[in-house]
Image: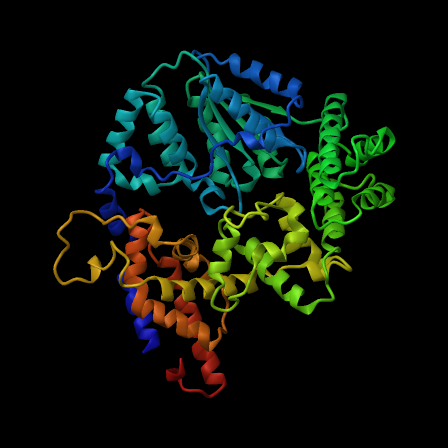
Length: 556
């Protein structure tokens, strides 16, 4: 019976194009049909520290000003190692262009955020931003969307051609039009690299694409020899970078001295010079150290600072190893002899790492409320707040300080002697989150949510289109569960516990329609094709398991 119910519901709702097109009728402008990546734009608080990167940004600005509509578009590729400050430069360039009225669009890739972990929403986001700048382009794109609704879910190549390249020639921009893309290495595909290499030169010459990336082999190979690509790196040992990081070091240590009441002269010229030398040009290392020292949970900041400077093992290490040494130093301060803390560390840090998009502490607590009702996220990671952004505020999304920390804790620590206790098992936490999502949906997708229930009625609703559901009725935790339960589920390998299977059975038989209504009200319903595939594989494995254990299939 359980198998039949699951197959029925998945087969019934495995047609996302119907629900999505139906949802679009309720939107006022055709441009609103374009999937837009929330949070992909620039942020002034993440720009370069004042007085740093002046020469490099000046060179980028000069390149922007050379745009000429009679020529072809160009790409400025800033390619360098992690931790050198590329993202801060991208935010600074985007801010300057926006203030000068030259910013067409900006897109900051982030592998931890589904909407920004690939090119799926890249060109639809850029197309929307460009369309609002020109009436002619807006009318053209709107016409495309009216005639070909499926372009909103088409391949990046087709979206670029129909939504950006073709309409870009309808309007002559008399000033540079800058598109900023950051962290290409976190979201590129072979198709996207091909577009950047072969299609970008077909844009009018007024377009300038500023692009940052780690020097991944595929990216360097595909773009570095293209005639329209200007490639630049940061000389972390050069005079300009040393001057910049010296200024940054002084500022960050003043912050530590103020927070820890160490005096205006702390730590003195000699230790300041040693700190700058130890940094070896890495801004992210300076940032992580200063946050660690200024943390309320860090005792004897002066002593820890001097100990860090005396560690000869940090000098001359590759960037990745240097950051790993620092992460291990910070993590070592936790109480690993406290079994309760270790359990909560695994739960909280593991959840943060495995989440498909960042959540606030309060939402994460709400998500885990059934199995861990007394969980206090901020209390668990208070000793690690130098490694997370937003960890001190229950209502702010918690993000890792830098991608290298996520790589360390989920991969490199597992195979490093003495660091295994820091390792997070992503598969295990995907199963925990899948179960938590099912539990919160089963309880919170109540029948009395205004705007739901219309798909269950025998008589069609009186209002046209899909009713809107107020945010006050859908908590941050519930909204996360609705969006991502299926992604967590499809990463779970059998066997599952009886409680897990029971929660899944209850959701599919009792709450699937209300789940559809909630997602469709915000234009987010995408179907259950992947869940259907997962069910077929999982049911087969469970069947084999039952035979091996000589149990009845009906026990499932």
